[in-house]
Image 1 (cartoon, rainbow, N blue to C red):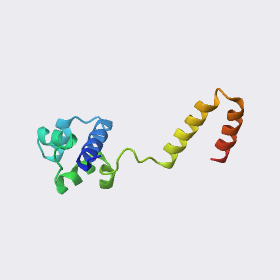
Image 2: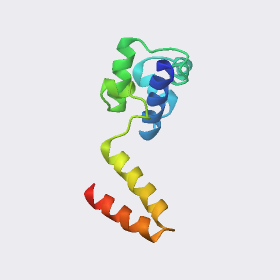
Image 3: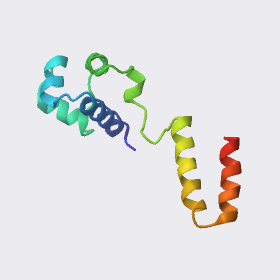
Image 4: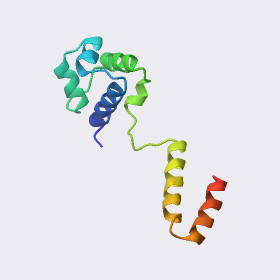
Length: 106
C-alpha cells in the first residue's frame, strides 16, 4: 500500500479511537481541516513538525503512524489461529482432537 495512505489511515484510525473530529485535531495541530483531510486520505504528507504534533495529540509513538495494519502482534495471530482451528474442528471429531492438541502446545 502507498505509504501516504498508510500514514493517513493510521492518523484517521487513531483520531476516531480518541473520538476527535477532524476539526478538533486540525485545530490542536494548527492546520486547517482541509489539510488534515488531505493527509488522512493519503493525498498529502504532513510536515515533520505536524506529524510529531499529530502523534503527540493522538498519544501514540511516531513510528506507529507508519505501521500498516496488516502487521499483527503475536497475540493477534494466536487468536486468529485458534479461531480457525475451532472453526475447522467443529465438524470433524479427529480434527477436533488434533486441534485441541495443537492449541495446548501454543
